[in-house]
Image (cartoon, rainbow, N blue to C red; front, side, top):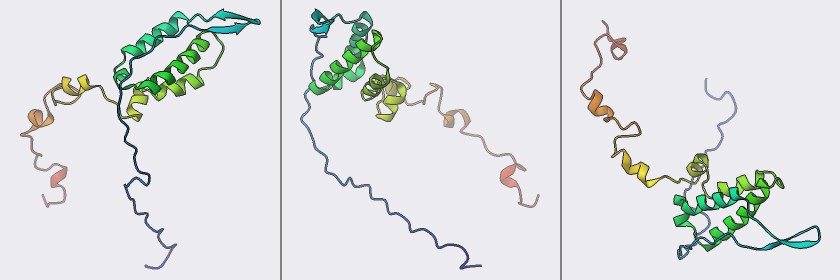
Length: 159
């Protein structure tokens, strides 16, 4: 019976055009900097800061990462500040929340890379288009299969 119930909500029309124009930047790949030497104040005296070995390994991991070829100078500077947070974490000075947020922006975990729509090129070509299992495509395995008479597809056809 028509006319009962609330009226339908108006449909939203989706427009995929970006309301803000995109800024195109000239790309310049930057070489990774070394972890710097500097002094910090401890007990009223300036002492040389010593990077934890774990942070040095972490820094080298980023230098060797596939993402590094896409880092510009501002990326490396941001990651350098992040290295200091990493060092403080390994010394027991901080919690991991800020570090987690910062490395997520660089695609540190599989979930981060998926959110950033990053894929590894070797993985794309390794399966040669056969899918993730590496086996033959479904059409090759099951190409000639047909439904059996009397199966679900034939229900209600007056058997």
